[in-house]
Length: 404
Image (cartoon, rainbow, N blue to C red; front, top):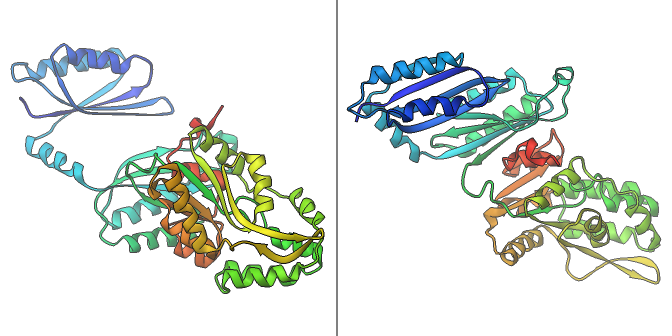
């Protein structure tokens, strides 16, 4: 067989182009070694790496393809590929694959340039770039609320922590989110999505809202903030806060439940993953009463949180049973994965506080969402720019797949 030939075709896209050109090649019994196609604003770029049988005149094939392309108003270019070069290219297919996802309110050339430079500086090659967010109308191109581009990379990573630090520093500098993941079979095969509740699935902290009604809002909020930053032991801080709520009427629970505000993108995310067959869970150091309210509203499958003790129509300042703290959240995630018959690699965990770090660290995709600095720095991934539905981009879901 002859050395491979790369055929590159560009021009205005329309139906039938690929069929027409490959029909010509089929007439010469040509072997297609690789093929790829992309279209941006109806501008077609089609590449085929082919091998022509020995008994066939190569120039005859080229002229036939050139004639067919010209008849379609397309430009064609041929590049002869030496067999040795092809063999070296084939050997590279075993190299590790990765995905970097850029998320921002709008994507700029500066962002892409800076990200691509980090990639290059770490010896990685960009194989493919895909826009995951929807098409942007010109009138909102400078102010769109959500944009995402995915980069498929190839090559070994010599120093993964250094690469991740580089992306994190860049994300902070140019005010975007950047997620780096191994491109393996689990990435689009997750099956369980677990949320922290307060300041993750909902805006604000329920215990702070209860504290306001008890007249101890500032005291409790200060303790909550220190606990979320990891400055206080969670069990101890929960006990201190609950003791300040002693005597608060049970009716305050209904009042706070009625004022819960979902986090941006929460409904779209949960609706989409449910369509994809995911199970969903709330694993919270907050209170199960409010978790069940969200469960009914959103169709959450599992809720694990602290049960407030109520006596004589008032909060006692204690919880029933064991406290759901960081280690317990991680254990619950493992239990749910086992119950669903999946591996931890197939789980996604999302949280904002220090007590979420144990479950974020063992999940296949652990995401610190609008998190405190300690949590953001310690988690595998961090999202700060967009809403919860941006997680769909980290899963590789294109915006068009979420419509309808």
